[in-house]
Image 1 (tube, rainbow, N blue to C red):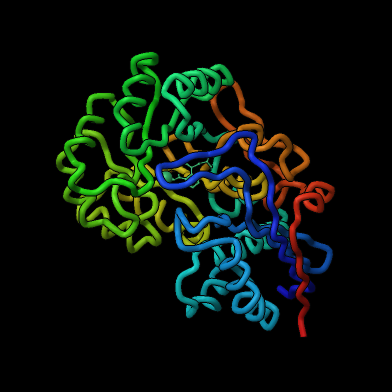
Image 2: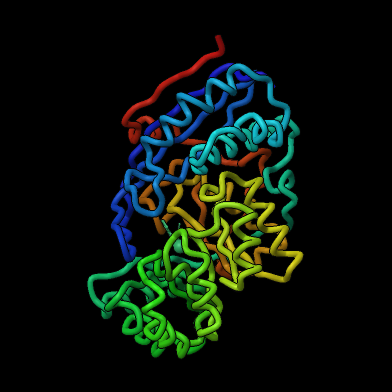
Length: 370
Ligand code: OSB
Ligand code: MG
């Protein structure tokens, strides 16, 4: 399919509240958005990396660099017919999964629109809604955390994920569990712990958690495999899984019993679906992670999360949990059963608000075929 124009946008949008993890704080969403034009169609993609070199090595600027200097020249010089040929065309580029995934999202949107089908349909998803929860950042105090959790529960979220860090792990988890004995509860360490912290992590076994997400190093499948047998609670890997091969290593080694799938982290929805399929065949539950995306990335996550192996609630909350106003015309809202509805319009199914995009754009650049 011939592309007439590619536009990159470097945007910065404030969050309604800062988001604190064990290792960094985010106060606004800085990211690269991609717009493709082909004949009469307009398609959108979102790169998940932020201005921080924290969750992974990728940042807004590395995403821009990889797109501008490597991926876009390849796309403008070729006539790609499907996602498989896009993956083949960029396969020689090392690393940078979030840059690759942002472009892949835009191509999924374009190809689905060309076929006149929803992204969900093109991915092989089913149903009208997906189960979601909310990821709660570390709060100034445990009392404040209890207020924040109560507020999310009153909005209808039925699954809570707590960010934890040393000193704010057992205390915070115990406090929330004491108030809500039956709540679907899980925690996320974002790679801050080491295997030597195993006894501390064993203390989390008493709280009937759904899972403990990525306590150890981002590149450390081996020590997770040593930790998992010491716990009753399933470990779930996030940062450590960059491909279906990593998923195989983790499962063969016994490093986790659940996998978090983020299309950005694994280089795109295609690879995310491979991981999903691999886990589904082996009875390993997966769930959709989040990177505080705008409505564009959220629409993609909701569609992919409707594949049958996504049996645990995803980190895909309503637009209002992140932004006073989302970048899309119809923001995602929470249904009373703690679900989000999947868009029914062909492609990603969202309409970007150009007024807001203009307001939040720091820099944009257009690219044309030679
Ligand atoms: O580790 O899952 C994570 C946000 C940014 C980076 C990493 C993570 C997260 C979240 C937020 O937990 C999930 C969401 O988008 O709501
Ligand atoms: Mg995580």
